Image (cartoon, rainbow, N blue to C red):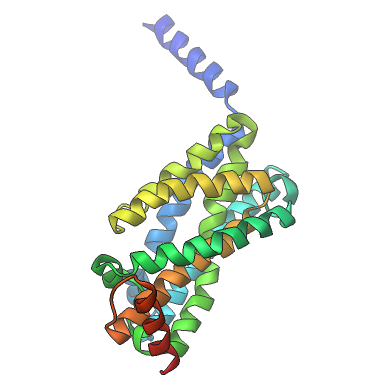
Length: 259
């Protein structure tokens, strides 16, 4: 019995020593960061532990800020301070910003069309924008999306920075696929088209960030996509206009411009 336990211990010790510490820590702590975001950054936590009297936009600001801290500040600090990684190694530099800019510009027309079509569905109008008060208040709408940027920095760095570049030294190109898995799973409660697109989008964004060596390109891409779906859904909810023809598109824009 003793010898068997000793063999098991030595086998476990050898396996443990063969692991890359950074990769093991990243694949473990990203789960911790996600849990911390959902628990400490939630609306329920804010109302129970901070205040129950704040406007809803403040609750969303808390959620966005919590994502910024748990998805960006803490993961980046971990890689820099604990593992002594340079900014250029973990996706924090501008990287190949020229290629990133071209990709972003090519993405925008397609995203505009796709979000326009998707916004005609009741499932999307029931969910977007999350801050329902923004539907009837454009100032609140734009403030909401300005605060949303903190969320996107944290959200994108957790997957396309911390997880992608934090495991790249051992997983290589497979890191692109690994970071896309939890990213897609966190879209399970979204409308089915968005859930499906999250698989494609997670892989595509991971590949783009890998190519450009900078996670920053993913922030405006994702922020623009969310802004557009919120914008179209808000216009449809305010005007009651449905349909996806060019005539419907013009009618919706006219309704917006007329107030």
